[in-house]
Image (cartoon, rainbow, N blue to C red; front, side):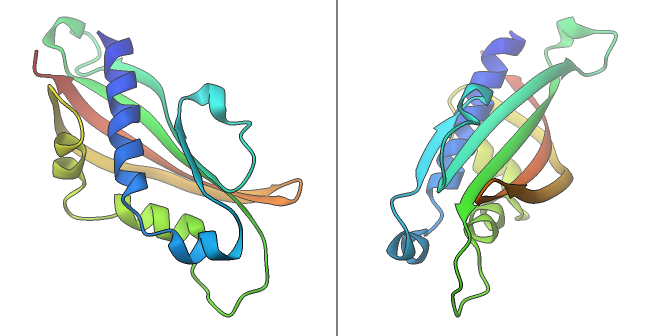
Length: 146
């Protein structure tokens, strides 16, 4: 069950990320790639990767209840370039997840999926070679409705 929730969570996050308007960024560089899974963290910039890392039963001692907290990372890799705009690709993508309706947004982008609550764990950024890598880490308390 938890493996299925990981995959559904990745797909829902990927669908939300793809709704961001990245046309201004693409006009400076090339097409932004969107993908899922921790196996794709080696993609070259510009890219957005939605990766569900682990699912922990909630409450922890009763996995049969079916509720899980899914640790999820939204990873954005972009090339640095001097521009007149202060908005980065990461800003544009992360804005899609930092809304008051994130639970409903996740539910509407995945079949047979219910989200009780979603919250930001932390956000990190740094340089990886010639790329800027930003990561938004979320905790999503969810369950399957099947």
